[in-house]
Image 1 (cartoon, rainbow over the protein chains, first blue to last red):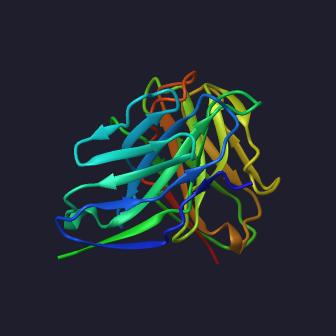
Image 2 (image 1 turned 90 degrees about the vertical axis):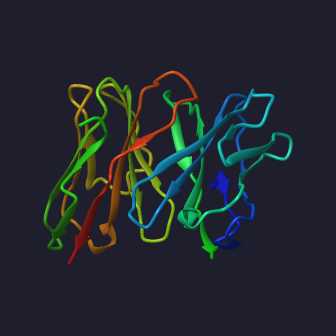
Length: 117
Length: 116
């Protein structure tokens, strides 16, 4: 069953504007972690930001912030002051504890962001 | 190097050949993951190791796929009798943590497999 949903296959944003990338998730575990990764055209996956399920405050990392709405099971990424270098694929991911033990991380299908000059 | 290293970066195989993809994680990282990423798609989980123990292999698409991490460091993903649908980028990631939902994944550059 799909557990991470990213409903926006592609998004356009004007340079210097803010953009929100949507992510919803599904889990019955009380403890989980939510992550966003960036994948430029070069292919490497770059970690951006992390939010724990018990964290009271929304995570922020520089121009990135995570809008965490636990009751709605949503973890949207907000990028402020977009730059041309932000053009990339963005993946939402969740780390949970399966019955088998360990900590499995699953990814959404991604959103391709295009920043226009 | 300090990052996750994968080899080969590119592999072209004829249908029916066996291939082996290597992953050298960051030293000391407990967790190691293999993912398969088709073009334009998100990474799909294949398997997960905590040290040398393979705790989850539920994502392996068939019994032609096999992964090991015998000494808890380097891992190898082996694909037997390759098929065209196996063509993808195979990503390896490691994480320091083996007991917390926190801790980001550090990815290698991937091994791009093309099966002709």
